[in-house]
Image (cartoon, rainbow, N blue to C red; front, side, top):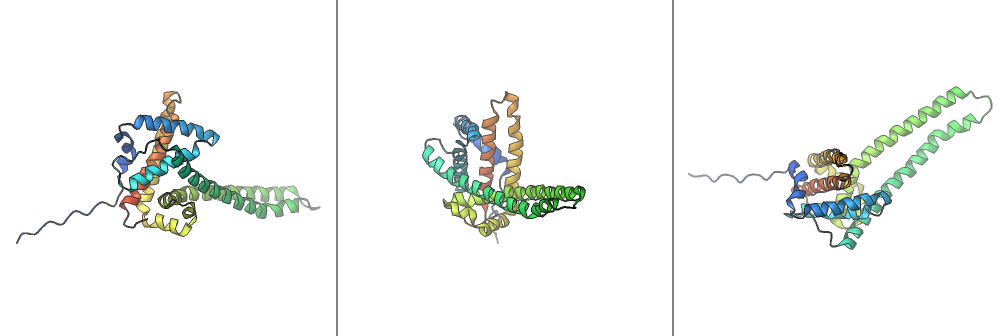
Length: 237
């Protein structure tokens, strides 16, 4: 009796190497990366932010859809700007929310110390120690929450890009579920971005000429890795 071999189970792990190499598979990749580098430079005056985010979002969706050459062209600046502006507003809304929370926390933490400092008969040394400790705690909180936000935001951007709605980025339960359901691949995607960001620093070897295209490329690495995470996920988003 002849048995038919079972079909191989498709891999559920993203291709780490292709996240770095897929850009060069596009025959027009140099022009696209140079244009992206120019918009990355324009991010210094905020103008380029929506275009960089919009292009990354479209690259992410193309990879998630399984496109052979996922790099989009720059022929739809209006659409890229609209997509990127939505994500930029999401980012600034999260950052602004954190600033408000930190300001309230600082007021609650430090206000009693400053009030006590104005009371007669209080020595300066204990109050100075308490104020310094409060500032230290505040810095520690900022560092921890900023790291958590850096881990969380790519999931919010990914789901907002897939749905085309900015409100999706604020569905924090669903965003955390996206991270949980794809934990290994999501972590690998973040590692890809960290490695790409480190490598992009070597653009300084070209007397700063290649810094901005390299920084733009690092964003595309994250977009591709997240898109691949969605593509191989057992769930649909």
